[in-house]
Image 1 (cartoon, rainbow, N blue to C red):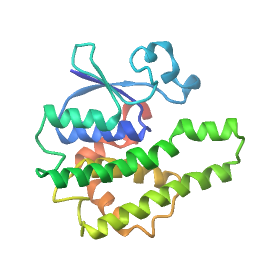
Image 2: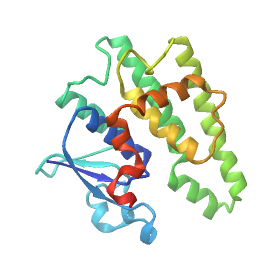
Image 3: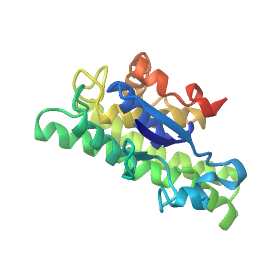
Image 4: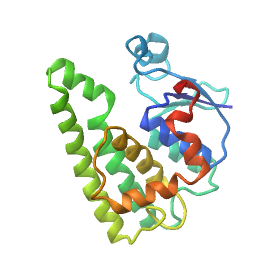
Length: 216
């Protein structure tokens, strides 16, 4: 069985959980708490699993093979368990889905994740107010672009097409974080609509942070 090194509040882990749920892939979740005791991801035992000391990490069955980086893991799942497909069948469609996903995974998330916010606070001693301004700035930059792309694409229930793709898998955790930090969403009606529609799907609901064992 696959083993997912997971933390309930990690949006990168959230993405992988959604993908595995959509594909009905069974896995064992192994909690790596990012905050408790200074962060369990910093332990020597976890460094042996992922030298970058980040989540998620996926252990392939009973082998010693470990995959890291959420989008790489999801692409691996797509190749090894292709149904239901999380990418369009045409090359142009796949490129558009990947580009949209990377706005979140490569542009917004790396600037706003826990370790960056902690570094800003502790190394540069910025106030909570300025830290929130930083967080909102990068959310606005990304969400403005995504809303424009969704309007151009005439998106409705999902970011692309008529079924969930990797774009939706990235979108929902990012919106979850935005709402958790009380980021105003009034400017983003399509993002809001797609997020709400996705959350009606069991695979997304089961992946929510509050529905994970280590959230209790």
